[in-house]
Amino acid sequence: MERYEFIGSLAVTAMAVAALIWRFETRITSVETRISDLSARVSRIEGLLKGYFLQASKSED
Figure 1: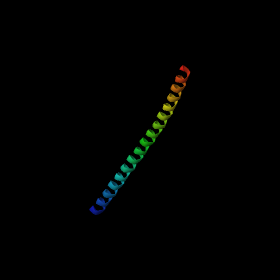
Figure 2: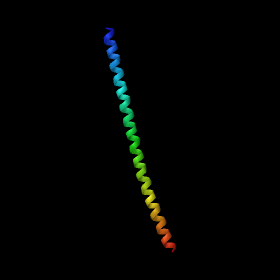
Figure 3: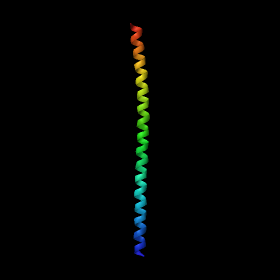
Figure 4: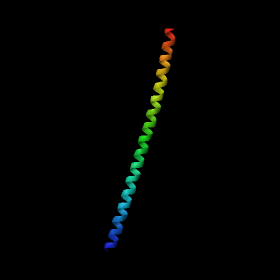
């Protein structure tokens, strides 16, 4: 009977470790997606600012 308890606890431990690994992987993927979205927003803002300052410098000439 002790053997079955050991195998059961080993299986539960293995499933818990697999669940933790899966959770960390999904969390990292989520963070990568957020960083990518933020990078795209920053690039858009940079483009808008460059355009604004180019237009402002041309109107001064």
